[in-house]
Length: 94
Image (cartoon, rainbow, N blue to C red):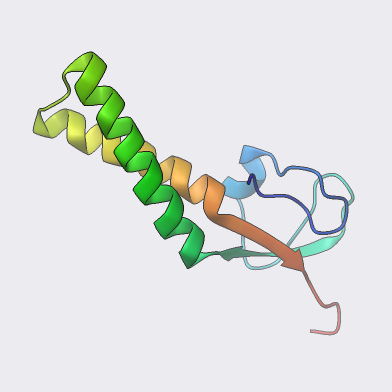
């Protein structure tokens, strides 16, 4: 489920996702692609990751404080955004 290039099917590096704009190029094959954030993936990944991390944190580490919940939400949010990007082929006509 990692974001990949629609042309060469190679996984996108984390640096590409951080610099993802509406129009960019694949670092592997250098073809034009456009980044989209899939709302369905955001909801799916966030809910699953949050409950898994919350369960593990409560079970093993006793993370019940507000600070640890905030940190957990931040970590889950970053992971969710990384996994929720989707790259599509970009038209050269535009």
